[in-house]
Image 1 (tube, one colour):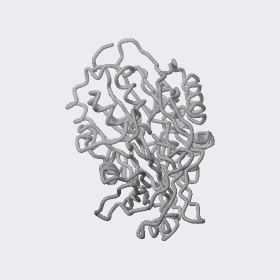
Image 2 (cartoon, helix red, strand yellow; image 1 turned 135 degrees about the horizontal axis):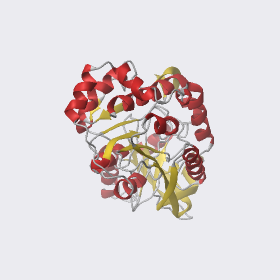
Image 3 (tube, one colour; image 1 turned 30 degrees about the vertical axis):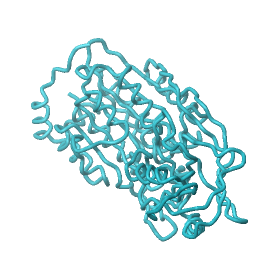
Image 4 (cartoon, helix red, strand yellow; image 1 turned 45 degrees about the vertical axis):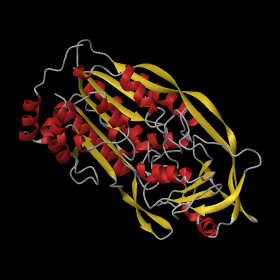
Amino acid sequence: MSRLLTDRRTLLKAGLAAPIALQVDSAAAVSLDLTMFGPERLFADVQSYAEAGNKQSGGAGDRWTADWTAKRLFSAGFEVDRQTFDVPWFEASHCELTLGDHTIPLVAQPLAVETGEAGLAAPLRLAEIPERLDGAIAVVRLPFRRWSSLVDRAVREPLADALARGANGVILITTGPTGEALLLNVPAGHPVSDKPLALLAPRLAAPVIEAARHGAAAKLALRGRGGIRAAQNIIGRRVRSGRPWLVVSTPRSGWTDCAGERGPGIAMWLALADWMPRAFPQHSLLFLCNSGHEYENLGASHIADKVGPAPGETAFWFHLGANAAARDYQEMPGRLLPLPSADPYRFLMTSPEFVTCAREIFKGQPGLEMAYPSAEGTAGELSEVIKAGYVRHAGIFGAHRHHHAVTDDLSTVTPDPLAATARGVRDLLSAVVS
């Protein structure tokens, strides 16, 4: 495969001087059928994705989505491969805290360490009080945030501190917009905690916090089954010999149904798979749909090392991450009121030469209107792309209000912002790919 010959300075100069609409028309004219970017079709694909259920890597919903996306790529004219790798899994049969006559449901945080049949009987203690926690069940209250990862320093450090002070178990209160327990991404290799660790929904936390203030006796039960199972990355190729590559990637897995977290990215990815073979006839195309995301980008790490074309042969890589176009909400005490607009807590990062162009194309789209150079910091699977040396890139990622919550269902997506974002991605590709 030949190297990309376009001079970046020439491309940037052209991008700044020429009207964006003219650049977009050149690629769009190749494919006059743009119905795949309409709100009805995009939303129908989000609905199909949401109805597949829970998307934990290698589980039933993830496997269904893998088959579905593979069939869609094949229908669009791609050669389809699957890359199989191992992922851990855990399904809790019991995860609860007993306080006297009251039982409070908890959520097991994979990779889980079980308590055994007898459970863990111990006093509750608030972890923020600076004293030894020997033999106690420590209650760690996280501040209000849209939590995502157990590797996050703001989670990792108080957890490690509670364990270092002798706690025999830990309950994390993941304080966030929904009031639900928020599952956290973890490394796949081993549990972050060598003691039982469970999550508590903030809306249920008041009696647990009060009991921990007084060192009340409690019993933590965390039991289930788990192991290792197979997950798959879906890989679609349209090879045009000697032509530079365009790559579009998106994760599909996650802890919950992931309708708002993953659905918009999946729908846009499918629309681009239908459109790009005709829009870019002078390029080879690689479309990637990754599993293993909740294990700190495990699937994407396999892709970057073993599947991606050489960076020097890659004209552009676009990544569609979390919260590409989820619904916004008004936050009211104890509830969220839906809005018709997109949640602005999403980021558009590009390689430096495309920042100005991206800002023009996404003008007026909440969160995305202020594209940033990726050198200022990225997150999620886009980080794997950049780390692998792909210097011409862009990506969207973020966290909507139902991120990693059981409430992340189809109600978290609305069609019009989804379509506006999809058109923006289409137009950015048209503008920056020579």
